[in-house]
Amino acid sequence: MSKKSFLNLKQLFKKKGFKFRDFEVSSIGDYLPDDADWNYKDVHHLNIVHKTVHGVQAVMTDDVMCNINLQKIPILGFEIPMPLIQYDHSKHNAIYLSVLGPYIVLINSIFEKFNETQTNVITKFSIGSKGIFRVLNPIIEHLLKKNNKMLMNDDLPMRNRRGELRKINHLFYKNTERYSFEFSENIERANVFLNEEEKNIINIEKKIILEAKDGDIVGNINGVLSFFVTVDNEGVKSVWPTTCSHEGAKLSNKCLKTNFLLCPWHNRKVNSLLSIKDGNIKIKPTIHYAVKVMNDKIGFKYRNDPKYYENKPFEYLKYDD
Image (tube, rainbow, N blue to C red; front, side, top):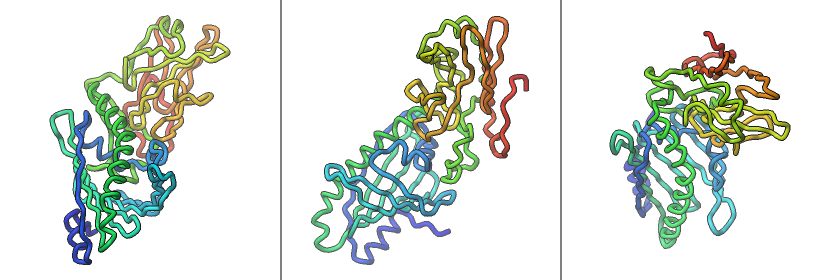
């Protein structure tokens, strides 16, 4: 497949009489280039996390996606349909091609390591137009900058969350060298895993859980072996993971929907791991976690095997496996 670079595309449009207005924005964040790559390829979050755009998907392969984006225009308050072609030109080099009326919009995002834990993302914009339409280029630039700022305000917490988990030895699985659009569609997977130095089992004193109050965190402070407690109106206590095992979203009682959690990134349903009523502990089997009640402790085991999800059917995890 032939893929034009950012400069190649500009040159082709220049031959057709388009002139370009260029600008760029950049930011340094506490995450790795892979986290930016994942964020740009993550299909499901677009219509959940972002409130200013709604994507209608037309074509998708591993590294090419074509959408019609219904883009809300700030201040004016209405939506404009914008076709968007997104693809990788090379590793950590993403190209976006769109049209806004008589304007061609070319975007090139390059993400590279700034240091061992931080990434620098440089995004170049080119607005192409002909004749009298060039008069409005400054307005188009203003709208693009404003829209980019709003999108990044939504996206950066996702990337930073993964950077936060990396600092406590969590890793993120992908089945190819680069993230792919198609891979991101399977939200049933658990792509978060602990490196080999970390144990995937934690034992928590039973007393701590029995005495926990609504909103308390038990186990580790953060990550896949960290859990929070809820207490409903009938006094039923439930224990939930604080981290979505799919891609690392932070979970809390703010995500609670009746009897399950709804991941804020992908609307993935997450069930509780156990419930307690009048001191009686009921284990709730799940695919990603197993629980074992012992004399004075309760053990929580995380599957920690992202390759397991390559094939269905999935089975409940057994604590002693």
